[in-house]
Amino acid sequence: MGTEYITSISYSTDNGKTWTTTNNVDNKEEHLQITVNVSEGDVVLWKGIAQQMGYYDGDNYSDYVSSFFSSTARFNVLGNVMPLLYGDNFKGENTLEYNGQFAYLFSDYDGEKECKVVNAENLVLLATTLADSCYNGMFYGCTSLTTAPQLPATTLASKCYENMFYGCTSLVTAPQLPATTLASGCYTYMFQGCTSLTTAPELLATTLATDCYQYMFTDCTGLTTAPELPATTLSNNCYQYMFYGCTNLTTAPQLPATTLSNNCYQDMFGGCTSLTTAPELLATTLADYCYNSMFNGCTSLNSITCLATDISARDCTYGWVNGVGVNGTFTKAEDMGDWQTGNDGIPNGWIVEEI
Image (cartoon, rainbow, N blue to C red; front, side, top):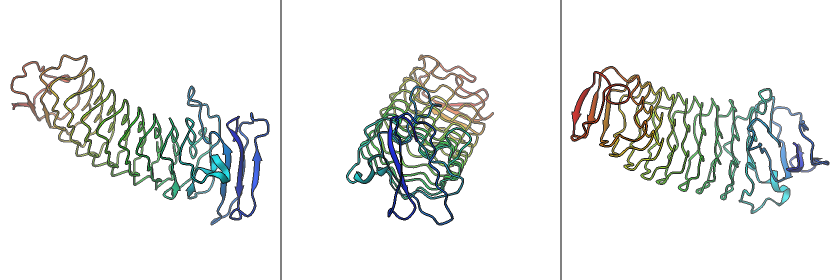
């Protein structure tokens, strides 16, 4: 625990009959460790009075200024998180008011300590009104985590789930994501490096926000199928690097949008070496950097349909087919004569068809 954001933290090892409380007397104490010795099967209850619990310094991501859990034993976490902020007066509280309130709560704090949480299925995140970065990095680097908590909020806040399961290499099932109102960076890096994840959650939003899905599944090498992406209204960087390095992804989602935004698909499928067919690209007018490196390194890709007739936007197709399959079929609009051949246009050696 530490700094002025926490008033006290209490724990009980006898089901709440008695509590041990540590007060932050001078409101400046940092790196104060509360140690609880446990045996297999023990249950520890926690509560606190705090404005932030797990907060990080937004100006310096390496400077953590509040509290976190670490452990030398594997454990499950369950129950409502709100008593960590409101103590015994948590009932009815479903609003997160301050940025980063539970950020990095179960994360690897400094590269030396770790948090061996295994099952968080019954951790209750009841808040329906979120704050910026509220769950950012909550399970960052928890390599033992196999099961995630439910995320019921339907209206998100900026970076609210950023890094939430980053590097959770044992996570096999992602939580449902029912949100339909997104915010900038809300899912950025959310599952990056979750190498055991085979199925992605359904993504329901039809209107996107800046950076919303950026890097969401980067390096999820176990992912074989992508979620549907029904959005027709895009925003800058919204799908940037979304499936980058997903080496077992065999099927790409449909991309129904016809009006694009800057960088919207940049590097979206970069390094997806098992992908054979690109999604049909319906937009006729491209935006700056929109397809930049989109299929870079997709060594098995042998089919692209692109109906663009205006590719004058800045670097919109720069390197977009670099490293694709040696042989393939490129389908273009019949009246489009501006394509060049090579990494920035139609792949060398491919058959060209028109529709």
